Image (tube, rainbow, N blue to C red; front, side, top):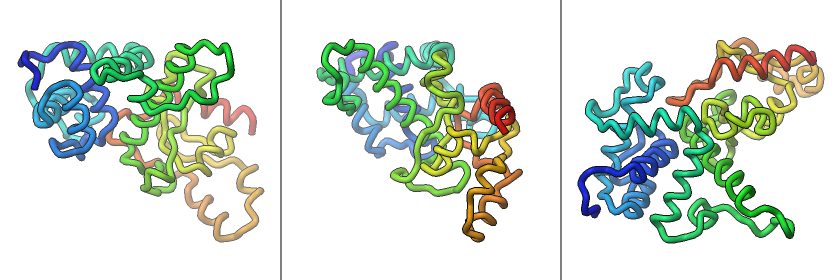
Length: 256
């Protein structure tokens, strides 16, 4: 239990990290991640769950659905929220680094990333930061979609992936931004990356003629055709940013 009842900036950043990793409607004092991280920061699971609810009140995507979170909160929550939206990559890494410090472990251990395959002489800090941020991005995106592919509706965490709308290499600012993410099964993820499918800024699914012509099985072809013009399943939060969808969609159109 923390000796100070007031939440520090560091504790609030870790709470924000947990907020991003748990579907908001599933957050509770008994959720395994809430229990785990509450112990790390020396707070009760109830206190951490309440803090997650306070952070939720700031989320415009939740507000659109009539979900307001808890009505009261601290100024620090708003400060951390604004910092995240201003620079998601920096705050994502900072939150994981703080978790490691509170746990008295190495960040690669608490973030559960492997560094065994690093070539000799590679700058360690750069690689660690990149992989930590990739791990955070994946967790935040899949959580936002409740582990459900936004096109197929497949809802098994082991069968979905976090797909960047604008590729990691093409947009340094939005690399870790969950609003630059889509939750897709491996087939649609690959098709999206290869510009065989796209999603418009209005969230409509578009399929290329190249993909349609490549499908020989009639049942599969009918299924893909039925997707055209339908809308994706939207996440509970971190709604895909229209400007980023537009960048991908314009590139999709240019190569058809």
